[in-house]
Length: 337
Image (cartoon, rainbow, N blue to C red; front, side, top):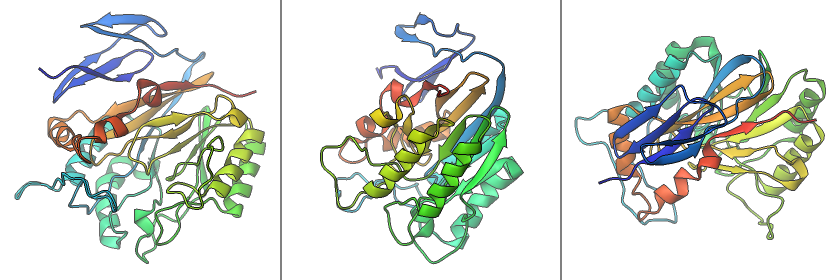
């Protein structure tokens, strides 16, 4: 029998999965211990004040991809593909994610890069056909490394800000043409610094690549996230601008939340991908006194069938890499002083 896996804990609900079975517990008391069906957990504290806005994010949706489990230099297998006659798995996973997010009625939807597999206009048009009718002007996109793999030009409007009740979304482009690694340009840093200086409400920062940790013992010459020099400059901006309360990335296809000494309780976050295990998106609940990140595993039966299959990628190690701890997935984000 497959064990139940606690996936999501919010202030008032929790979700667990066992294979393709789902348990959804609702109307729970915030900031309280619960023991339900053998699952013991504590709900998130609810920030004080009125709930003001709701945001959803996705990343690494990869329209046009046909093989799952391919990573240069790590040919461990297994490789998964959609079966003949089946819809392409990026379409299956994204349709299900869109349905769940649409039901949330979010104020904004941020796509944090890798909308495409090979960076073609055709793949981007496929992405737009799925996401734009669902969310219209509430949809905001930024490029990832896959989106700049070719010489096509789309999704290049960043940096830009989206002002909502109780929060500002700052979206930055960390991509480098024809490169898997990331950067933050001097112009982007200046823009973010200026926004952090004038913002009259908390700012959530979104980009595709994750930062290098300034607390690492070894400083690499190259890094598959944001280059160490650029990472340190971004972290310095966040350190001196208390309005900036978190940075949220994709790229790594895993759930991880780090905190650095220089920025205190600011979360530096990576959220797992839509296209394969665990098949994910993230919800942000904005209150007057704080924000909650609530991780969501896509629960449609056809999506779960695919994500359960792909949990075994990379020699069976993918689950432990991608899923992360509960504290990497669901947590409060507090204002800074």
